[in-house]
Image (cartoon, rainbow, N blue to C red; front, side, top):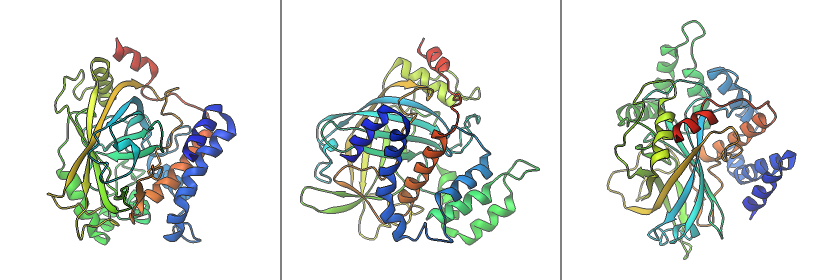
Length: 361
């Protein structure tokens, strides 16, 4: 209900839109953040992350502080009914829910060059007709590189470019990894991952653990992934040009819909939920919860995803946070980023309306 009210207020514009959008994520996250002591004096704040993002990638007013280069997509999600035994969330029944999503590249540089190894993300807002919406942010990496918000801030600082060479300082990164063997293991998994040719045939993982609650009140730990139906597709650019990943996506969506299966992995006894650097063992039970279909790409310049924060704590009944600390941190940081960019002059995105129109022709 609160999400619906916030959506209606957002449509009216102005400060009511801003207040409504930021209030719900903050309230949902507050209990988890306070429980972790994250915002107590001497600890991290959302402002700390805003300063860190600027130190790493420079100031870019009007843009998201992370995953700044992106494009809006729209479509729908069809529940298969197979996950209804795991969660009472209505979207898992055999119904169709509208979707507003966003593909993006990690980092705070809105005009960065597309590269094969850059982390790709898929953010989704799934809006069932008669129940609470579900927002999520997925990435094409198997695990998160750090355990918690404090480590992530330190990792970003260690990875920031040297002002003289404009490259990361190897000594700083080596020192951080030496203090965090879990990050060393996670980075090895990231390095070994298969790189696909584009957004359309990539797999996107939740990374964090959540909890499904079924109609009987039984709770189970879960992670999930969007697995593409299309394993290969004809691309126009294939690695050429600054925006080739986005150009290819625009070109393909202009010719055909793209589909992913939402595959839910059920945690087993002893599976770690509080540490997103640790993968769950292969062979865990998996359930195909439904199919995501995307049919249209739009620029963020006036596009439907422009004002959305893809807050991972906006969850429908039947899905709840786990003891994983990262979603609560993301929730607060996303809200702060939205406040800042909403008060800054709007700037043109790298993937402009003209680029979208060109791909549609």
